[in-house]
Length: 265
Ligand SMILES: Nc1ncnc2c1ncn2[C@@H]1O[C@H](COP(=O)(O)OP(=O)(O)OP(=O)(O)O)[C@@H](O)[C@H]1O
Ligand SMILES: [Mg+2]
Image (tube, rainbow, N blue to C red):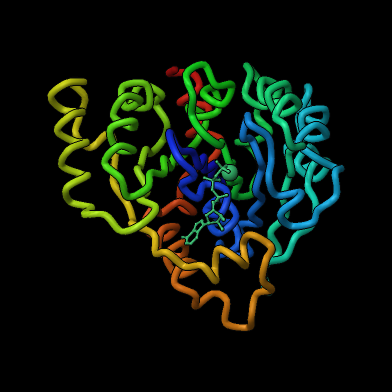
């Protein structure tokens, strides 16, 4: 099953909401799990009123030398429901120190807990900063979704990171626009930059979205509102469902593809 990394380079683009939303709308057969990997610390524990333990710290401890990714994930996850969907979550303590210590355990040589399970793992990687301990996670991901808001300054910041992101050699790299923006224009700016200045294939990055502004769905995913019976019909939930379909994510080969990329990088 695939590993999806959700990240952003500037602003609060909705990465945490998207990580949770993608897992919430994923088919139950893929047994999604959200793992908070944001080096700045987790939000979901407080937002969704979850317990302090188990957490990413327990996942990292269980991952040490683990051969059983299932067991390690089970050791770190807490039950969460969004409407009728089960969305287990591995929360990270607020603050970030423990996340920054745990990340190398989850992404180092031989670590495979995030990539070898037969579940869809959605990692909330927070903001990508130079030297962030989350960079080593990206080559392991089948899909890296880099979120940006509808502002030219954010796209400019993203350009600064493109060379590194393209080099990361993730399975599929896509820019996910957080709110309405002329998608074709952004796509053209970025693909021209990639082709002309980075001398890389212009299809190294796809452009997806924009996601709709949907306060209701965001409030459901943010723990401020209980999901109604028709929660899957909310515009943002539909957009997440379409996104999973577009990425053809759930057909991607998991461990083998990740292993091949790990060896290549
Ligand atoms: N599509 C959306 N429509 C409306 N509100 C949204 C949407 N996506 C996210 N939000 C709201 O925007 C705020 C920031 O979202 P979120 O916490 O997911 O961002 P983030 O990128 O993870 O930020 P952080 O830097 O805190 O990690 C939250 O209040 C969330 O409810
Ligand atoms: Mg966040």
